[in-house]
Image 1 (cartoon, chains in turn orange, cyan):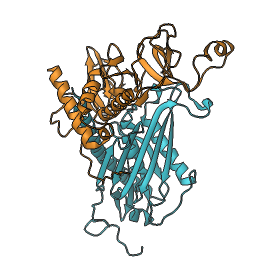
Image 2 (cartoon, rainbow over the protein chains, first blue to last red; image 1 turned 90 degrees about the vertical axis):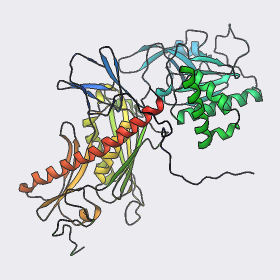
Image 3 (spheres, helix red, strand yellow; image 1 turned 90 degrees about the horizontal axis):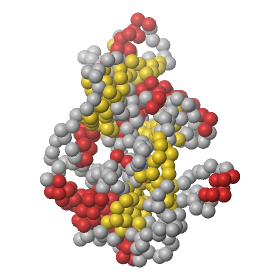
Image 4 (cartoon, one colour; image 1 turned 30 degrees about the vertical axis):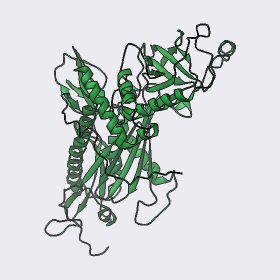
Length: 263
Length: 245
């Protein structure tokens, strides 16, 4: 049985190799953002004696008259139209609920849904009123920080490498084998329990490790970045992707390709 | 220890510092990936770790939920190897509870709890090595952890201890100075506004000297703020560079 051991090394500061300075206005709590009272205050700020003061540590974002501070790491704040992936932990126990839903969804099930409404105290109301939402069957779940999931038009992607991925806005990412044919009648509540082939499972494992590598280096997650990272990781074995040097190498290559694609 | 000079004639303390000088502070944010926020601090030989979870739904009894703001729950724990003699400290003993309450008082003053009604914010602090200024180190590391978690706060909460020896106020006491038995006070401050979040002293101090000692503690807290401010800005800058423009 082969064993690998590592000695502790001084942690390298992330971003050293990037060598570029940020142009953003960075603030910490207590900093005055502006004394101009014409601005509306957004998240991450509060009003204190004629000044707008930051309440989180992050970068200032200004959209016309609205100023907000985007923190580095935040808990997920629901917004209408977001896609979320989550696990059912508790359910209401009422008579009609028992009759209607028990057959389909139980406690412990993983589902994908869309945010319908947000209450004033921050709670969100979800709906699965479309065939693309519903119970999730076989696949792998990766939990990342919500701030790393890029907002896009669609969060359901069928990647060309042979698997599909759902990028939940709440930071829950679901990787699953691409279904061969869309189940129109079932509408997403019947779990597909057929065995998944080894090739598909390898693709899914590789994708999962790539996502973990991207998150460790704080790269925004979207279909292109995940795909480039997957392609950059192909020369390595799946389990090697989690090694720090390999992780760094793959992500550097991914960043380069993303920059080339933008410019 | 009889005969130990806490303040020499030339104005040097036991560890070579001047009266108002702070110990060296080193801090790091984001040390645990699993927690919402985490931080580690070393003030001289005092080392402390803080972990923050939240805001999340109230665990346990829903009746404790406050309808208009978040509940701040602080827990303090001290490692068995943190003091000179290894001592097992049961959870829930008096000192831990009191520290927890004092931390809660400091953070309820600073965290904008109205933004998260009916939820709970958990702050867990553990002292790994105790060399005086425990409360101050706990407050400082917890501030960094709360900032790391992205929980909105009015301002930093910076704390320092202060004592009084031979007519001079000393800032940032070490264990030797605390054990000598003189008066000592702990102060937690919101630096930008100068508001005091917590002031604690359980010793006898003549009223004439109070202002001097208080001023020493406040200045020390502001000095701590300068260091923590630098640490947070560096952390934000690094992460910002990584995420790209």
